[in-house]
Image: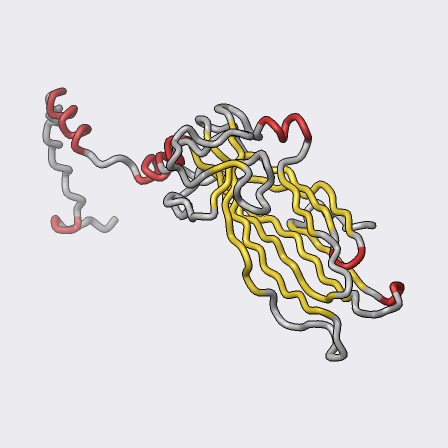
Length: 247
């Protein structure tokens, strides 16, 4: 049997040094100075929640006329009272009938304003939505002897009262008489909602929920003297669930 030389023999393991436990006070200092785990830091960051806009109805008529409605709802109950705020951007391109044919080209911006629905703490919708079943509607009248395009696009966000301050309530202006928000003074915003034509200073800040968008658009050509040959089409967004625009 072959024997190992002294150098090839496994060395005897050295005796382990005795383990000395750190005093409890030192351990507490180390834990206090240690940075929070990355996972905990990420969990602590506020996360934007989804705001849902549901199309409910769309009725179209001749020469661009339509009426559409939507329901707005928070993904989670509001952490405190606040407002669903919608920016409306209207654009139009309308031409009178002539031998040149239907007007063509992209619609031009004609109006921008903001309107607000008050939402109570721990609520997902405003009071009128819970009572009436819908939040917002968009309408456009018939414009005979014209052709054109009209678009009403909305962007909706939810902000808490601590961010917006007092914007008012349904059929009630803010308590501050110098506030740019008012009820019934902005064309197109209706007679109940607080609204303003001035961009809110906090509009570009991160919202609690949103943004979400909705849109109603109509395109028509009512220049043919034969009514049966006149056209009028209306579409609304979002298209899930799909709601056809019917007469």
